[in-house]
Length: 369
Image (tube, rainbow, N blue to C red; front, side):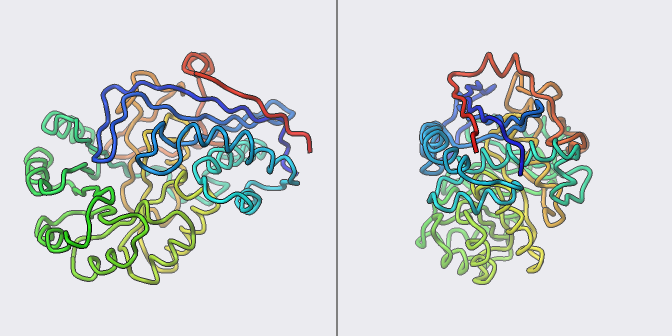
């Protein structure tokens, strides 16, 4: 059995350097849940539940995730005879949905297991790359010229733009003035409808890296229709919440690539299943971001070390968002790449003092089985 003594769940408030604006919501303070999984030998595994305070991205929030962890997921886990973190996904099948809450505890258990094995989590999950290519996201509130020039100096391999419908061409052409030939994509955030099909097709001449999630999250059909008629890659994000969603997307030709987020799909085991489907189908993947602390960012970088993650992910360095991260050695981007941690587990040291200072509330759950 996997040695698990206690789980601590903290709600942490992290003030962003500047507000992050998308067409769906504005984030000024990042409320997130940090999950700590302790064993009897003093090892601790860390996970992060990446739900936002408000339900603008998914139905989950920090409040719903808190309650799910406290009253459902941890009690279900406590009744199990867990041998390996790969079993957590199956154990949680009795609870419908709530992938972000599930991912928060599942990723903490993977970190704990790797530390018990005295191995890096990259090695445990079969990661291939020692460093991964990083892209950066520019929000609607960013100074496009200033930020584009600044991030170009760091060598970011891809720029993702948050855009307003009808102003995509204007924004993209302006960005190109400052970043040159670096690939550009934009995030549709599911705001387009069938009536926008011609409008989107008319953007094909911009030679974009991809268009991410143009249509609503439950749509496979119109993504398939657009994918057929454009040379530009069509990428799915919110549509893929499970390995079955990924299978459908591949079988229905609804996408050229998939953005995989640990929180959105429920953790590593589902992400690994998606990775294996994509490998068979020769579909490239990339790892998306959710304004994570250094804990969630470490998990993302490790996920992106898998072979099929062939496109630059949203893996910008810690100082992009935080004056002070809650890890001692924040992630840095050098020549557009981030090094994959090699120390046991997720390979980062959490600054407990800083974590305590940013903790709004917490609860402890003793594991008795």
